[in-house]
Amino acid sequence: MAPAAASGGSTLPSGFSVFTTFPDLLFVCEFVFGGLVWILIASSLVPLPLAQGWVMFVSVFCFVATTTLMILYIIGTHGGETSWITLDAAYHCVAALFYLSASVLEALATISMFDGFTYKHYHENIAAVVFAYVVTLIYVVHAVYSLIRWKSS
Image (cartoon, rainbow, N blue to C red):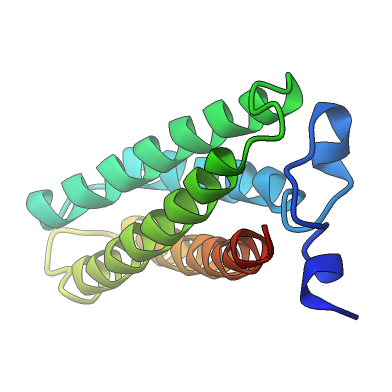
C-alpha cells in the first residue's frame, strides 16, 4: 500500500469521516488516553511538584488542543487547504515530544517516591506512567502518518 493511501490520502477529512480515516481515527485514542493521564495526575499525590506540574500542563494542553483540532476537522474549518496539513503534522510532532518528556518525568517522580506514600499512591503514579507512554506512542504514530500526508500534499 502506498504511503499516501495508508495515511488516508493527502487531504484532511471533514465531517464524521474523521472517525473512519487513519491516522485521524487516532484523535479518539489521544482524547481518551490523554484524559486518563490528566485524571490520574490530578488525583495522585505529588512527590516532585515541578515535574508533575509539567506533566499536568502537557496533558491538559494536548487534551484541549486535540479536542479543538478534532472539532475543527469535524465541522470542516480547514476547507482542504494545505496549511492545515502542515499544522496537523507540526502539532502532532510537538505533542509527541511534549508527551515523551512528560512520560520520562512522571516515571522519575514515581521511582523517587519515598516514605509517606502508600501503595495506592504508588499504583496511581504507575498507572499514570503507563498511560503517558501509551499516549506518547499514539502521538508518535499520528505524527509519522501526518508527516507522510504532509509530504505527499
